[in-house]
Amino acid sequence: MIFLLFCLAVTLLMFLLLFDMKKPRKYPPGPNFLPVVGNYLLYRQRLKVLGYHHLVWMELYEKYGEVVGLKLGRNLIVGVFGSEAVREVFNRDDFDGRPDGFFFRLRTFGKRLGIVFSDGPLWKNQRKFSLQHFRNFGFGRKEMEEKIHEETKTLIEIFEETASEPILMHKAFDISVLNALWAMMAGERFEINDERLKKLLEIIHDAFRIVDISGGVLNQMPFLRHIAPNASGYNQIKNILERMWDFLEETISEHKKTVELSQQPRDLIDAFLQKIDIKNDPSFTDDQLMSLCLDLFMAGAETTSNTLGFAMLVMILYPDVQERVQKEMDIEIGRNRWPTLNDRIRLKYTEAVLMEIQRRITIAPLGIAHRAVRNTDLYGYNIPKDTIILTNLYSVHMNKTFWKDPFEFRPERFLNEVGDIVVTDRHYVPFGGGKRRCLGETLGRANIFMFFTSVLHNFKVERFDDDQELTLEGFDGVTMAPKPFRAKLILRKD
Image 1 (cartoon, one colour):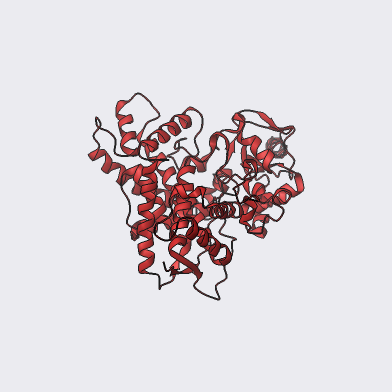
Image 2: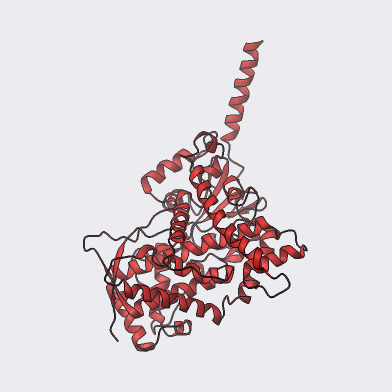
C-alpha cells in the first residue's frame, strides 16, 4: 500500500513537472522551459557573460525575433523589440497594466498602490490628481523654471567654490535635481550638502542596481526570501524601503501637524491630506500617500541625475562637441545672462546633443514593465493575461537599419540640412509612450536642459585624472547609472 502511494505521488509529481514545462498555446518563440525555474538558469548564465539585462534580451531578439517569450520562475515574460512592436504595445489598452507580484507589493505595504506600478481606476485617479496639483504648484509653468534656475544657480556657486578640487561628477546633480520636484511635493528644498540626504540618495541608487525592471528573482520566486534572504536581495531591499519609509513619514507627519484643511494647500502632500479628510474617495489613504511619495521621490532622484552625469561624461569624452555647444550659447544668448527654457528653440545643436545623449545611453533600456490586462495577441502570438511585457527601448535607439551607426555619438543625426531639429517619434522614445508615458517628462526635460546649459555656460568640463578610464557603459539595473568619475571644472572667462 505504501509502495502504491509512493508510485502515485511520483507519477503525480512527474505529471506536474511536465505540465510546468509546457508553454501556453501559440506563445511567442523562445527557449524551452525547465520545471519550476522556467528559463531562469539560462537567463542568469547569459547575464553573467553579457553583464547587462538588456543585452541578454538583445541576444534573444537576434535569435528569436521581435517578440520573445520566456518564463522566469513563475512569471511569463515577453520581450518586445524594434520601433513598430514597441509602439504597438504603447498604443494598445491590452498592455496598459503594470506587473503585480511580491516585489511590486513589497514596496507598497503588500498592496497595489502608488503611481508607477499601479493600474486601472486607481492609477487613472491618482495620475489625474498628481498632474492637476503639480500644475497648481508650477509644473510646466514659469514657476517651475524659476525653481530650477534657483537650483542651478546654487549648484554653480558651489562648483565655483570647489573648482580647484576634483568633483564626483556622476552624482553631483542628485540633490539639486530632486529639489525642483520636492518643492512641489513637500513645499521645501534640501541643502546641497545635506549629508543625511546624500546617504539616502546613495541607498536609492543601490536599490536601482539590485533588481531588474521585471522584479527580479524576488518576484519570480518569492519563496527564496525565506531560504536565502541575503542572496535573493530581500534583506537589502527591505532595509532600503524601511529607511525610505522613515524619511517620508517624518515629512508627512510634519504636514499633518501644520496643514490647514480649509485653506489652499501649500504642496502636493497638503492637497492629498485634504482629500483624505474629505473622505469622498477611498483611493486616498495614508498608505497611498506614502506610496505616491515613494514613487515620485525615487523616480525624481534617479533618472534625471543619471542622465546629467552621463552628459558630463560625454562632454569630457567629446571635447569638440562641448566646444561647439559653448560656441552656440555664446552666439545665441551671449555671456551676460544664463540660458533659459525659451532659448531651447535657438540652441538647436545643444538640443540635438541632449537628444543624442538620451538615445545613446537609454537610461531605462527595458522601459517600465507593462502587463497584459486580458488574454490578447501580439503579431499573431498568444499573450496570456498577466504576462509581463518588457519594451526594449535599447533596441529602438540602437537599431542599425534606422540609425546606421548607433554606437557613434553623433548629434548631427537630429539635425537636417539647415540645422533644424528633426526627430521620428517612433524611433526616439526616451520617456516611453502611450498612456503610460513618463509622468515627469516635462520636469525631466527642463532639468536636463537647464542644468546642462548652466554648467557649460560657466565652465569647461575636463577629465581630472589622465589615467582614469572613462566609458559610456554604466552600471546595470532598473536604470543605467554612470560609473564613478571625477572631473575638473575650469571657469570660462567672459
